[in-house]
Image 1 (tube, rainbow, N blue to C red):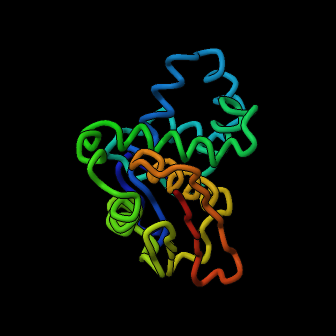
Image 2: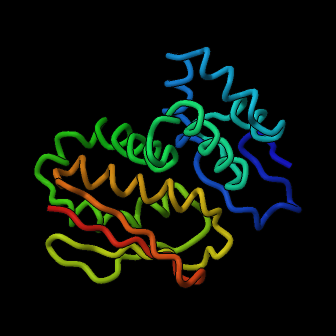
Amino acid sequence: MFILNTIEKEDKKLATFKGVALELLKKLGKEKPELEKKFLAKLSPEAKDIYIKAFNISRIPVKEGTEIKDVFAEVFFKSQASPIRHLGAISAEHALRGVYRVFLRICSPAFVLSRVPNLWAAYYDKGRCLLGESSSHRSEVLLYDFPEIPPRLLEFVAGYILGGVSVAGGKNVEVFKIEDNPQIWKWVVTWE
């Protein structure tokens, strides 16, 4: 099973992502310990153990990592129309407002979206992300080679894309998740 920073040999094909993706969750949990307690109580023992022990440099199995994000969103953002999408959006805002804040002021949403494949490769060890058809106010983000991606993670990614385009100055951003082909996941992004 999960060993901090390592996956045992029999789990070599297990999809993982960087533990830094949990940084915001831990920060918000410390700010609202009563909600964090409810969140931890709803996690499976495996996911709870991973959440508690993970560091920014850890590799988090996608299955448990998605459970962590989904349960966290349901507890902390239950009033949102889509709690997991909202968590994705604020995760992007948190990640991109730091060192990238000044840089994003001069970038267009289209440029930010052009960097999505690099960002995917930096965080996830499974799937190949590419940009599809793009114009000045519309882009397609495509994900190949990850047919078993959890549906809730697809929704989190939609929120992350929305948050990233918003941080880059996009207005009235909409992200449509197209699920008609599990060999190629697609998000269509529009903005003003």
